[in-house]
Image 1 (cartoon, one colour):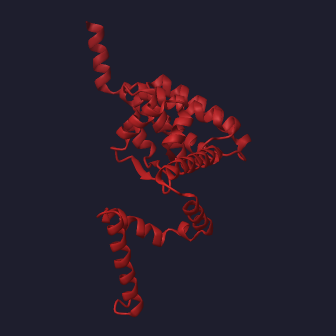
Image 2 (cartoon, rainbow, N blue to C red):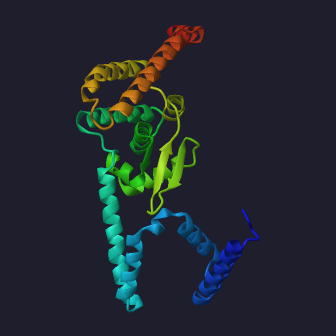
Image 3 (cartoon, rainbow, N blue to C red):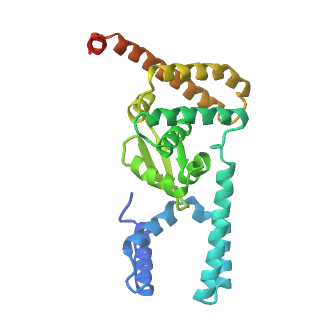
Length: 262
């Protein structure tokens, strides 16, 4: 980069002019805010959109005073929110038909597993849906789980402190996206294990649904749900084998013998 070129110097002159004008008009203002906005303006392709420039022109023509702009902006915000709500509704986080039924059953299994470790249904539901979908917003989690916004928000705050959950802001909207990057091994440590009979029941259920699910391979959510079912079968099968080994151990046998002597 030629920092001594005429073009480079012109960019710096324009930057100086914009900054001085901003500070003057806003009685000091916030330079950090200005820098963030200018950087976004320079690199975000949205600002090259012709409709956006038309919108600004129309708003300037419409705006006569602060009160009128407040009313206008409130209506614009409502339009933003409506469009975003429609976007979320049409997104692929809602599985289709029977796939959705199987998804809900898997979530029930994870909730029950969590209860063995004292975790509530909200906690288990959020972990389950993030496991199945990978990434979801708080709004999507509320729609999927049916729990209140407050319950979802509080649980996400707790989960975001763990390395398994990654929180990122969604550009252009006032919401975050939550990503679950853990494996089934991490699920085991976070959710807890079923007792042996529950593991076996879970395996039977999952195996019985594997072939049924193949009928809906053209439906949204089929691929990832099939993969998760396979992961969960392996997980619960491991639990059964582990618990069998524990029950067969000399330590358990000694405990049982002690109980018979009491």
